[in-house]
Length: 144
Image 1 (tube, rainbow, N blue to C red):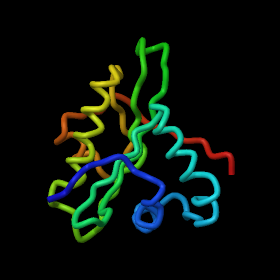
Image 2 (cartoon, helix red, strand yellow):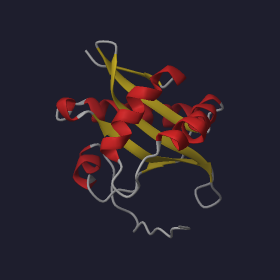
Image 3 (tube, one colour):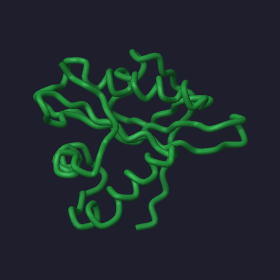
Image 4 (cartoon, one colour):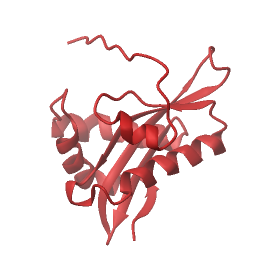
């Protein structure tokens, strides 16, 4: 059975492994991950500014979800934006990703977030099946 729990610093290797299979627009750099990105995300989650969850099966991390909580004026409260969701290829299609999203949705309710949003270009049907609906176009401007 797959368990959903908060990510911890000891999950770094498993999360990095999953990240390298997830990222298509960026190339993950292990030094950047270890020296800044991963510890900052762990810290943000510890203060309630993020939800950083892992799916674990047989004591192995097989998926993760990262969502950031942002205060807004337009929505009259916080919005939880799901930025990263990936599951090990061998576990796909078994409900692991859905379980991670449902856990994030439950935490959003607990935190009284106004909504959960997700920018996606490859998984719109997956999110629609979980109750998401299209409301906007997501545009990106890169500083690089």
